[in-house]
Image 1 (cartoon, helix red, strand yellow):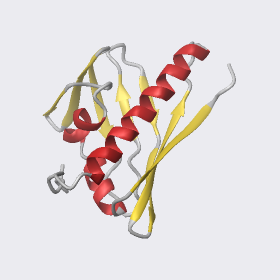
Image 2 (cartoon, one colour; image 1 turned 180 degrees about the vertical axis):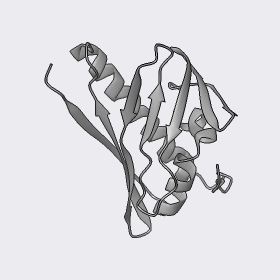
Image 3 (cartoon, one colour; image 1 turned 45 degrees about the vertical axis):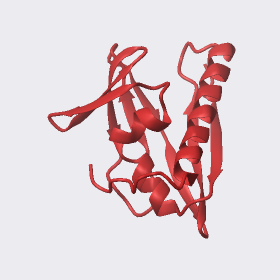
Image 4 (cartoon, one colour; image 1 turned 120 degrees about the vertical axis):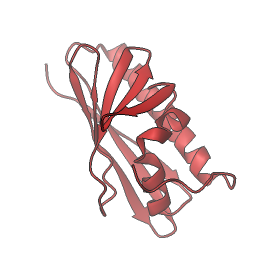
Length: 141
Protein backbone atom coordinates (compact mmCIF):
# COMPACT_ATOMS: atom_id res chain seq x y z
CA UNK A 1 0.00 0.00 0.00
CA UNK A 2 1.31 3.45 -0.87
CA UNK A 3 2.00 5.63 2.14
CA UNK A 4 -0.23 8.63 2.71
CA UNK A 5 0.15 11.53 5.10
CA UNK A 6 -2.10 14.46 5.87
CA UNK A 7 -0.91 17.57 7.68
CA UNK A 8 -3.64 18.91 9.93
CA UNK A 9 -3.05 22.27 11.57
CA UNK A 10 -4.61 24.90 13.76
CA UNK A 11 -3.53 28.50 14.37
CA UNK A 12 -3.49 29.36 18.06
CA UNK A 13 -3.47 32.85 19.49
CA UNK A 14 -0.90 32.23 22.21
CA UNK A 15 2.90 32.14 22.34
CA UNK A 16 4.51 29.03 20.91
CA UNK A 17 6.29 28.21 24.16
CA UNK A 18 3.01 28.14 26.08
CA UNK A 19 1.46 25.85 23.45
CA UNK A 20 4.52 23.61 23.47
CA UNK A 21 4.68 23.37 27.26
CA UNK A 22 1.03 22.41 27.50
CA UNK A 23 0.73 20.06 24.52
CA UNK A 24 4.00 18.23 25.20
CA UNK A 25 2.96 17.26 28.73
CA UNK A 26 1.39 13.78 28.58
CA UNK A 27 -0.66 14.55 31.70
CA UNK A 28 -2.63 17.12 29.67
CA UNK A 29 -3.57 14.79 26.79
CA UNK A 30 -7.04 13.85 28.12
CA UNK A 31 -7.93 17.55 28.35
CA UNK A 32 -7.29 18.36 24.71
CA UNK A 33 -7.46 14.92 23.02
CA UNK A 34 -10.28 13.12 24.82
CA UNK A 35 -10.73 10.74 21.89
CA UNK A 36 -7.29 9.31 22.56
CA UNK A 37 -8.06 8.63 26.18
CA UNK A 38 -9.72 9.70 29.37
CA UNK A 39 -7.21 8.80 32.04
CA UNK A 40 -3.44 9.09 32.10
CA UNK A 41 -0.83 7.86 34.54
CA UNK A 42 2.92 7.51 34.69
CA UNK A 43 4.30 4.16 35.82
CA UNK A 44 8.03 3.55 36.04
CA UNK A 45 8.81 6.44 33.71
CA UNK A 46 6.28 5.36 31.05
CA UNK A 47 3.04 7.24 30.38
CA UNK A 48 -0.11 5.18 29.90
CA UNK A 49 -3.48 6.35 28.62
CA UNK A 50 -6.75 4.48 28.94
CA UNK A 51 -8.14 4.67 25.41
CA UNK A 52 -11.10 3.19 23.55
CA UNK A 53 -8.59 0.61 22.19
CA UNK A 54 -7.42 -0.31 25.69
CA UNK A 55 -4.37 0.82 27.65
CA UNK A 56 -1.78 2.45 25.36
CA UNK A 57 1.74 3.59 26.16
CA UNK A 58 2.73 7.06 24.96
CA UNK A 59 6.27 8.34 24.64
CA UNK A 60 6.95 11.97 23.72
CA UNK A 61 10.14 13.32 22.16
CA UNK A 62 12.52 14.79 24.74
CA UNK A 63 11.93 18.46 25.55
CA UNK A 64 13.56 20.61 22.90
CA UNK A 65 13.84 24.18 21.61
CA UNK A 66 12.35 23.37 18.21
CA UNK A 67 8.70 22.78 19.12
CA UNK A 68 8.89 19.08 18.28
CA UNK A 69 6.17 17.08 20.04
CA UNK A 70 6.59 13.86 18.08
CA UNK A 71 5.25 10.92 20.02
CA UNK A 72 4.78 7.21 19.68
CA UNK A 73 1.71 5.32 20.78
CA UNK A 74 2.14 1.63 21.54
CA UNK A 75 -1.21 -0.09 21.07
CA UNK A 76 -2.40 -3.04 23.16
CA UNK A 77 -1.50 -5.25 20.17
CA UNK A 78 2.13 -4.12 20.43
CA UNK A 79 1.92 -2.13 17.19
CA UNK A 80 3.65 1.25 17.41
CA UNK A 81 2.22 4.34 15.72
CA UNK A 82 4.58 7.28 15.15
CA UNK A 83 2.91 10.70 15.31
CA UNK A 84 4.89 13.71 14.06
CA UNK A 85 3.72 16.96 15.67
CA UNK A 86 5.17 20.47 15.77
CA UNK A 87 4.49 23.87 17.28
CA UNK A 88 5.61 26.57 14.85
CA UNK A 89 6.06 30.09 16.28
CA UNK A 90 4.64 33.12 14.49
CA UNK A 91 5.14 36.26 16.55
CA UNK A 92 2.83 36.10 19.57
CA UNK A 93 0.84 33.25 18.01
CA UNK A 94 1.70 29.82 16.68
CA UNK A 95 0.56 27.05 14.42
CA UNK A 96 0.37 23.48 15.63
CA UNK A 97 0.73 20.80 12.96
CA UNK A 98 -0.03 17.11 13.37
CA UNK A 99 0.93 14.71 10.59
CA UNK A 100 -1.58 11.90 10.30
CA UNK A 101 -0.11 8.86 8.60
CA UNK A 102 -2.36 6.21 7.14
CA UNK A 103 -1.57 2.86 8.70
CA UNK A 104 -1.65 -0.39 6.76
CA UNK A 105 -5.16 -1.71 6.36
CA UNK A 106 -6.89 1.61 7.15
CA UNK A 107 -9.80 2.28 4.79
CA UNK A 108 -10.56 5.66 3.24
CA UNK A 109 -13.49 6.06 5.65
CA UNK A 110 -11.34 5.24 8.68
CA UNK A 111 -8.61 7.63 7.51
CA UNK A 112 -11.16 10.44 7.10
CA UNK A 113 -12.59 9.66 10.55
CA UNK A 114 -9.08 9.77 12.05
CA UNK A 115 -8.39 13.09 10.30
CA UNK A 116 -11.63 14.56 11.66
CA UNK A 117 -10.74 13.38 15.17
CA UNK A 118 -7.29 14.99 14.97
CA UNK A 119 -8.81 18.25 13.69
CA UNK A 120 -11.30 18.22 16.58
CA UNK A 121 -8.47 17.60 19.08
CA UNK A 122 -6.48 20.53 17.69
CA UNK A 123 -9.57 22.75 17.94
CA UNK A 124 -9.91 21.70 21.59
CA UNK A 125 -6.25 22.52 22.14
CA UNK A 126 -6.84 25.95 20.57
CA UNK A 127 -9.84 26.64 22.84
CA UNK A 128 -7.89 25.64 25.93
CA UNK A 129 -4.77 27.62 25.07
CA UNK A 130 -6.70 30.74 24.10
CA UNK A 131 -8.78 30.59 27.27
CA UNK A 132 -7.81 33.16 29.89
CA UNK A 133 -8.74 30.63 32.57
CA UNK A 134 -6.10 28.07 31.54
CA UNK A 135 -3.81 27.46 34.46
CA UNK A 136 -0.17 27.98 33.61
CA UNK A 137 0.96 24.64 32.19
CA UNK A 138 3.58 22.49 33.83
CA UNK A 139 6.96 22.63 32.15
CA UNK A 140 8.36 19.37 33.48
CA UNK A 141 7.30 15.80 32.97
